[in-house]
Length: 301
Image 1 (cartoon, one colour):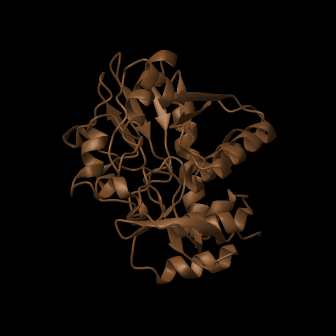
Image 2 (cartoon, rainbow, N blue to C red; image 1 turned 30 degrees about the horizontal axis):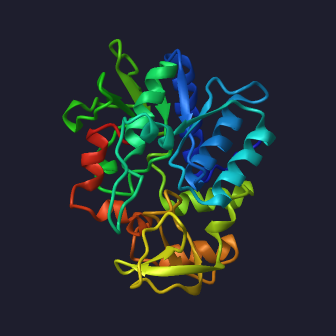
């Protein structure tokens, strides 16, 4: 008889594919939230395994702050052309122009929090009843409270006290009109799991994940990419440094880490030795002790 040897990545992959197929079976208008980061890129590969040779049963949705890394947008457009799936872009700049949100002022101003309004407007416009995201429980303590199927009320708000039990991989997608569910297929993965999966699957990533020389400044003890989106003054000294990014977000709040890791094996070794989580490079998470939880309660990813 033939024997099959499944390692832990096979188990994580099978769970994620099962969840994606549950979404397709339980919801009428799901969407996959795509940031251009490694986690959402991994979700796209999992969706390919779940639904090919057919088309995805959902579009990809990117909430564009207008302050994204150029490498991320270039990657996004090339990937969409390659996979031939539908992309919907929600624009934070459009939300600003319509007066729905007010751009922050000051040295540490960021558009990251403004994404929530644009996301909720996009969900309402297209009547999405489920939004698939790449959040993982190991990222941040508020995300550790999430279930796989996380119900949001008619205002897009998250209440940790309304979390549903998920026993024996049974997911309850029943919702009332106006509610929607955020679904996290790789919730049980760690950052290292994602990188090991990327290595195994030979998944291409935006170049900013790998070490490169870049103009940076030091802001709040972090290395920030020098860009027109940062409110810089005479105190900000621009210098060049060999860096890479562990997480991809708005340029105004996503810090780099000093690194010589140009290969995936180097990155895996680097992460294995790190004592700081990848969200430690996100300035928006340092606003308060409960910054992420507060944003999630307001409808954030």
